[in-house]
Length: 99
Image (cartoon, rainbow, N blue to C red; front, side):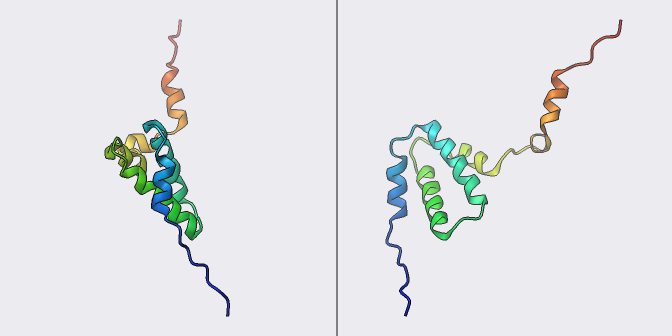
């Protein structure tokens, strides 16, 4: 009879210990990485780790929930969502007057 792996890890405690020494800027950057990683296909253990880190960052006392929400939801306005790199280049190079 094959033995099943039993996971006794405390993911929340590990995540709290990991983010304890990080600055606010580093926490926001880590949150962006976690959100991006959750969109990809990951193993069950990795998923538990990512969720624990996300919860730990959300519970941090100096973190703004509105900023975290904007990181996870992306840009809100249609103009910002539909913009691409060429828009910036075209707007920064106005047409020159003909002599």
